[in-house]
Length: 345
Image (tube, rainbow, N blue to C red; front, side, top):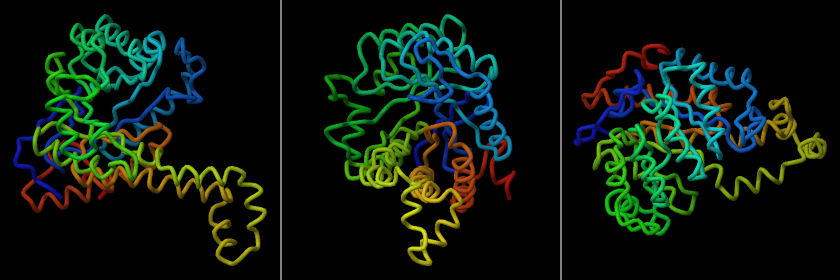
């Protein structure tokens, strides 16, 4: 566990505080909604959704937040400007306080989102995701002209996944034709609440640098830091291949019945048969990768699909309590009014 010499900034999003020394504030979680092929999305162009189901998913996140003291951001994903409008309006109708990330692989959609949240007065709750080496001049201009003042700033260097390479992207530029560092671009766009993303990269392709960069970001810049570390699991080739080999669990279960005492007991333990075994093998590193980041000081964990909130919340509560108990020995104590140590111990 760590205490950073650099002063640690804390950003306040309508009462949800993020940043600080490890242990001072609970980790903030980011849940993705309306992602590709999400079953609650009925029309991804217009942004038509099953509102009842979507609201139930978000309400469960809030219930667990109230239970544990760990707060959530919601990560709203869209590929079309019209869909963003619909999603923002829906979210504001059920929650007029929580911050939301605007996330898209389509620059035009994010440009539209910046304009829209400014027009309707939601910019103070919006977090642009993300300022990175591939950001276009028109995207920079749209962000400058908006009222959005918070953004994810990505430390991704495809040519050098080391800590030095990631820091170069943040401070010097030189990636994808960018002449400026991402932090300079963020400042010029009026971003006063940057959240540094250490850019989770696949196992074998610099994943260790993703974790070490947490320490570097906190120690060098002092800004709230985190990332979407579940992408390491998603991109783990061996695990995907192994999972794919189990895609016909009913036949596999039949072939394994009576094979030996261990297999019989395993299938009995997982009432869903091999489906349960596969899910357990997948979910363990999917959750564990985030716990590693939290012990290294990450302030924001974007854990992927909102449906994973149950497992992520309990794992995060456990980790936050352990981190606080350790950092108390370094002279750090909790500053948040709510924390898992108050609610779950």
